[in-house]
Image (cartoon, rainbow, N blue to C red; front, side, top):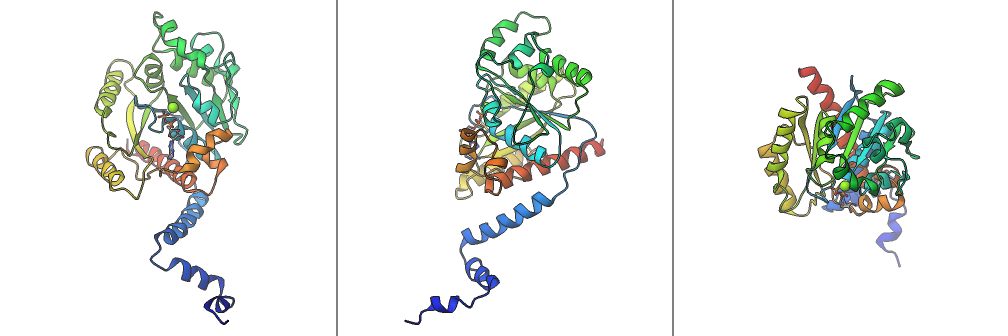
Length: 315
Ligand code: ADP
Ligand code: MG
């Protein structure tokens, strides 16, 4: 009757932890380090930028994590006390959905802003989970915008003009403005890259990860030369990283080799909870605050916050 289990009654909590985690179980050590990482990143001070950082999250490939990255970085920064604005520039409106923002067809949105019917101030909403996070929603109506604005003289400048008018006239101040781009290199994306100073490129850790990246960088360079000299490709973030596959690691290494100064150290793991959160109209930060995905997005946000301050000081 006397088994090892009876002895365990007398083990102290720390003995139990040691017994469980100081084995070769990689899950155990992962769990331990995850709770350490959670504690560290939630206690960290996020440096405030001296100026508003406008970051367009762009990649003409669909499904690489642009929207997920926009939404969760924005939420992580808002949680850390920053004032954040998200501009949803994708007719799919996935960023609006994920932040719980009303965006049924006909809702006043970025579409009306681009076409001059409303100002940003008239369409902006605030995220329920984060009082310092504002969102300009997009609706499916935006899918008609590219054609409708194609003949306007200032067609590339519509977003930039609307944004600078909003910031001047509303008295609103933000530390970060994120623009979630559609998966294309069309007029809507041009508007986003014209309005932004920094491009953040999420790259999915998969076999064709780098395909199309050259074209994207060339487009950004063209925009830089002809429309927006202050735009720079500032950051790349590897998403859907699966630590069990060597492919994920190889993709990371390859990007690091080509773009060492752009690639963020943090990688975003592939995690079911990240993909579940939008169906609850939530970011991963509010939906599963202690999950691996939430920790990673906070760490990425912190890295971005630190980089911004560092790069300004260098100049
Ligand atoms: P994009 O905006 O580039 O089209 P999304 O952010 O919408 O890409 O992501 C594409 C799909 O992958 C979505 O269903 C999303 O929930 C899922 N996804 C994104 N990041 C992760 C992740 N780290 N782990 C698991 N699923 C993810
Ligand atoms: Mg998207």
